[in-house]
Image (cartoon, rainbow, N blue to C red):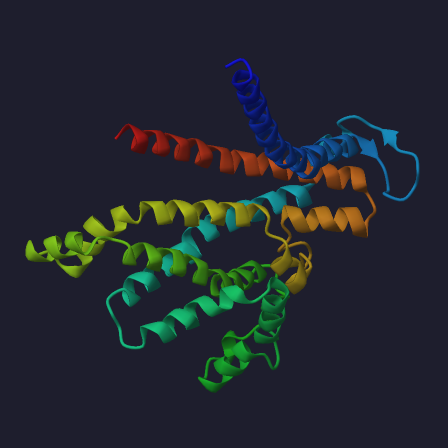
Length: 305
């Protein structure tokens, strides 16, 4: 008996050591690639540094104050908010509509699924290249089509007009990202119990009533996923905008991420660029944290049920 107890204790402590070992690696990765960069970025935002010289000049909150007096910065914030609203409504709504139409059992369903989802598999830089060609003002696809159908007067410099460029970019992103929303919603519709749909049909519900009163409420988990990822995408939007317009013309399409890149590597002002990234982190937190809080309440409610 005396020899068994120490053996059990050794086995117990060895198990605890293995568990701790598996926990230490994720924590180290989290601290190294998440916590440390945030702290380092905030430290750099308090400095005046060009990113090359060995010395830094501490200037406190000057970078933050100066940004609050720059119209360019507020324009980028407004663009981020506009993109947030667009991504929450545009690709999400269109993806839901396409999923609802295809869920009715149309002929050639597999082909349509591939066609709808295929753009989402294309890298962002390739999407930018495609749509630069589409929007080319003289011989691009859009201008050519307008000329063929007799609407050539509507053709313009789609990416060169400050009043039009953001709508042009949103059209490209709509084409690119709708496939993701479609796939999630389509999978959600296919997971709805058939008994619920059949019961509604027996009660005499119209297709619209079945969708709005039965299918849509049961799609709430899919909606939460799509909205959450769309919100994150709106905050980290960079590649499509930069590869298409570089934030131009005249900073019209600039978002915080592209402005941060330009200030850091175009103007060599790492301190101000770090301050922009901190503001972006705050904005992202203001958008994402309520979403996480709401999700936690939903999880608690489902567990209570």
